[in-house]
Amino acid sequence: DAMVIQNPRYQVTQFGKPVTLSCSQTLNHNVMYWYQQKSSQAPKLLFHYYDKDFNNEADTPDNFQSRRPNTSFCFLDIRSPGLGDAAMYLCATSRDRRATYEQYFGPGTRLTVT
Amino acid sequence: KQEVTQIPAALSVPEGENLVLNCSFTDSAIYNLQWFRQDPGKGLTSLLLIQSSQREQTSGRLNASLDKSSGRSTLYIAASQPGDSATYLCAPEGGSSYKLIFGSGTRLLVRP
Image (cartoon, chains in turn green, cyan):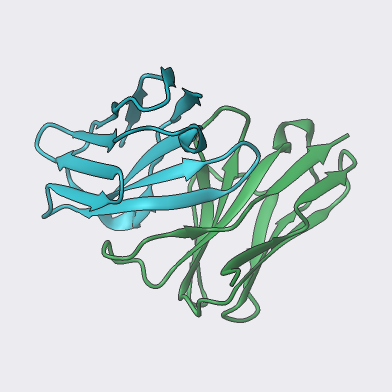
């Protein structure tokens, strides 16, 4: 019954060592989002895919990249993680970008940088 | 730039109380507003979506209202239960970016 799945749930990486987080969805939604949420803060949108069209937020660091090889999967790549990148990373989907559609979130991946 | 404020930041109530969580936003040109629940260390669960043309939405013991012109939304929880303990976030969506802008949330504790 799971709709938005994130793997792994917990990820530990070393400072500067590239890491990839995975998101998959069974909803066949057109839009997939990646958010970063630091402790006790609001989720912050990093970027989203509308179908194959990648939309980056202006203040997302270059260190963060994303790939969407097909409708079901989307990846978040952090090229050189710093201590400040430790956070919960949330993936979300919606049927379309129009306002009538809800966003559905996965359980998140908690990233620790040592 | 949209800014979202949620008051109070934390709330502790005894079981059975009715309570109201407040959300205010600075840009009233929104398309909709979503309320979410987040349990510790978990993702977000959508509770209610209010379109800009609507004034309120109800789901079970939850009722959310929206006053676009004044930039306010409230989430009313009736007959609160310990299982309602979580952080509640509001997120209006607006403008051309189709973006949700989140508040920092209200952390709710319902005491048995």
